[in-house]
Length: 361
Image 1 (cartoon, rainbow, N blue to C red):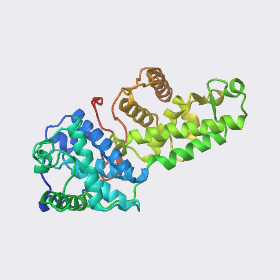
Image 2 (cartoon, helix red, strand yellow):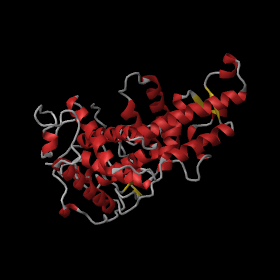
Image 3 (spheres, rainbow, N blue to C red):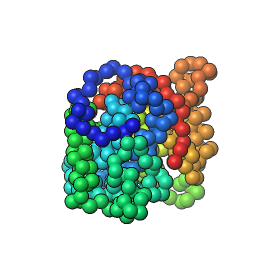
Image 4 (tube, rainbow, N blue to C red):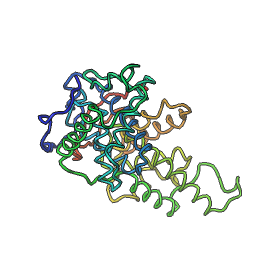
């Protein structure tokens, strides 16, 4: 059962291991399935994202909060710590880290309102062992049905104490590693290199059909690809990808996906692996690329209006790239995160089994 944080819960900095193995996550040891664990991450990251918008936090601060959240639950169980209280503490800490601090009372108030609305709409279920205030949210006599919590009330003060304590627990859990790199800066640099070097072209002749200059075509390509890649990077934050791969590898995968969705391809018959390799100082690993892309596609595949044809084309191209890289025709692109991974504190290493993400709202 989820319990309130106490001083005994304050953990020391985690021991750094050399492997990220999803089967060793604390929540799975406590009986949770891979799908349930991934679903809690996804839903809570949506909550963090919405809270970031309400609080008018910079995108990088919201992304940092999600990374803190993922790293925390790489070392702790969802059955022990209330995920929404952890999310609030991550937002508070990330806002400070990214030099966009918000008043603690304001963060608690807005996040509490969001949680109330989610529970009343049925998007959020009440966790076993939740606080008395949470239990009273749906009660007409509980005083919390409006989503307001009295800042001078006992329940608010107790919640504030738990958030402050959780902030310290999070700091110890992540080993005080507050400097977080995100895929955003890497993907912009990579796309700029590809476009400026004229290494990409539209699959259809855009300039002749719309009577626009070559420079306008490439500006359009740049803008489209950056927007798609940014969106895919945002989507990746809802999964444990930041625990499995370095940000520059995630960036490379989002650039690859952006190319497909922008309907562009490498020039002169080159493969995506060949052109992507020219944009980074590290080798482009086809297994990592495939794993990241498939996990992102699985996150977004069931959205309304999702482009099933593009998803199929991506899978076929990834399979072809893998077969070319291995020199065989037997490999297939499958779901899961069987690729290099990260320790919960940010250390990147080795292979880890995973199951296909279960899609639930």
